[in-house]
Image (tube, rainbow over all chains, first blue to last red; front, side, top):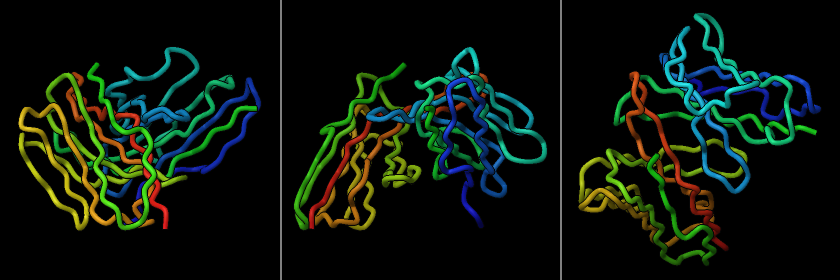
Length: 115
Length: 114
């Protein structure tokens, strides 16, 4: 049973370009979460999705960031017109259910560098 | 938003030593999780604690949840170089609209020197 798969592992973009980060959850998991980790900072929640629905996007910047989890295929985190401050590690996690005992399985992350 | 304070921020010890790291909050935790993150990897769940006073053991790791559920500790006995990593505590909380979130502390970066 493969774990959470994220790709690419490393992504370099010039300022103003678009970044697309992909996440395939574990088999049987319908809950997907995206987190951002800045250097010397903790993991910050961005968005929680279920198939075809955004449930909670309270951690997403209001502009340039969007996420989707289509019926078929991976979840996508999209960052338009990237700026240097977007450089960070972006982690996806999936879980089979949601609740106080939620066990989140994290992918290896995508490290975005904006030059 | 509940803030989680982890201490110490950095810890460097010799192989074989014991250590304890802490996670504290001004508010009550509904449930608390500990993760370990190795360089270049995602966090891996170690344990979930729910009940005040709860103690859980995972080989050389002992996790304790405070009676008032506002603090937790992780104790490692006879540390090994393989224990090196970033130890994160996370609060599981309900954020509304059917959404449970993990709120992480900044972590304790542990380095075990052979």
